[in-house]
Image (cartoon, rainbow, N blue to C red; front, side, top):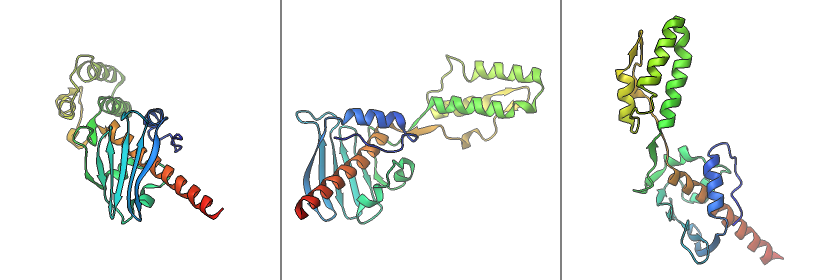
Length: 212
């Protein structure tokens, strides 16, 4: 299959990985009757990274090696998805079923650490230089330290809620989110857009051949 060509500033790592995974895939149209479609994308001789796209009125299902997700938005789901880029956050709002293994969102320790650093950087000017140094030292030790447990969102909220240094505290810690979309969900979003593009290209080529 041709690589998916979309804006790569949204999820560049996923896009690169997806294109590598489906490099030798081929499309098979198992059903194509109006909005009833069943498309299979698979490398011959193996089921690794295969995926099916199945549509019916108001539903699109992607299933395969990277998980199963079901969306509902319009009578024909193909035009709605064929936006030219992977709008994963918005698409997630239309999910009717989520893969129990791949999930939708997961805790990101990196997002938490980025938030802590950015928050300190923005608030540091409110404190005297000596206090700033002390505050940052305690943040590095008590929140960003190597052996500090930040493995869940609850762990991170507790770290923020319990922290105090020279008047520096975190208010409303629980209002923040440190979740990100899962790799499996994002991979499947790329697969949907790629599959639709290949399907549309095949239909267009067939129309040209029929009229030629």
